[in-house]
Length: 412
Image 1 (cartoon, rainbow, N blue to C red):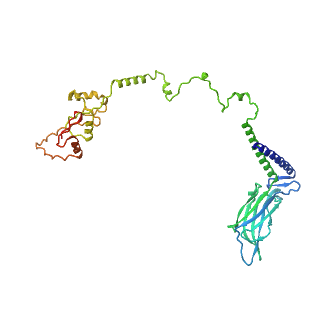
Image 2: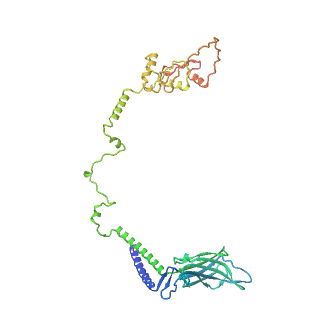
Image 3: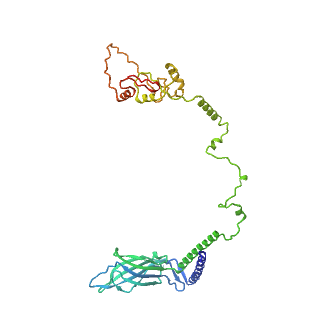
């Protein structure tokens, strides 16, 4: 038996149950009527309420009973239903109807059982003809006494408003004594049938919802397996389906240019981009005409002490061509290094040095006007860098080393 057959069988059973409930509802509507003031159904012939309350007391646990000479050895449960009814009374003075509320109390008890930690009763109590749906249900656990009134072990109060759904409520309830919770608990279920008409109407609505869901399931199954369906209209056939592919013919497809992120720039007319093109051409021409000058080693002819990094860099770089005299080299250094003229505008010397610009030698100090001779200052001890330079550029006898590329070491 497939799932579809099972669904169809369930639909048939739901239809049969719905037909039986509908017939029962029609019969009740001829016998009963719903009273919105009391919230219960009443009979049409005598106006008596048909609401009833079913209470089934099962058992208890963690029960604490008194153990004494006068304390009894049996326990029972007392159930009290307190219902508030509304009646109309005609006032003779004002000749008007005035509503008055009265409380109707009905009490029932279970059989007595031996006391213990977990007593069991397992009895059902039925309250019929409750006049209204407003009130409380009080459940008391009692212990029999040999002399005097029975002892109260614990109490549970349930408002009837919690039972308006007309479904059974089965749970453990905590017992209270003198408005204080105890460790004892009692298990009982209660169901308040206040209106059979509204209960049947609710059941019919639930059955109809279940049948609608099953019919929806069958409809989806038919769409999946592709059963014949009614032909759609011409307007629907003209539209392509969203999940249906479309055949592409290369001959009929229009050509499209490749779209890149530079499409917006390329879309400008040539007249607007003329200046840009001219500038690019001029820049390219200048770059081709003026080749880059290679870095060369600068011949150090000035007798001054420079840093160690400057000396090592000049020692490793290739020497400048020696065909021209030194004075010509100094004068021609400016046009060769024209590309760096902007950077060295504030430099005092015209020589180009890759790392640092050499500083001019400080001018000699003018003699004092007093005519007194300058005091001779003792020579300072050379620093560590000067000692390393002397070790690099001189031999053991103190003579300058032969440097590569014909370079001469400065004298100290």
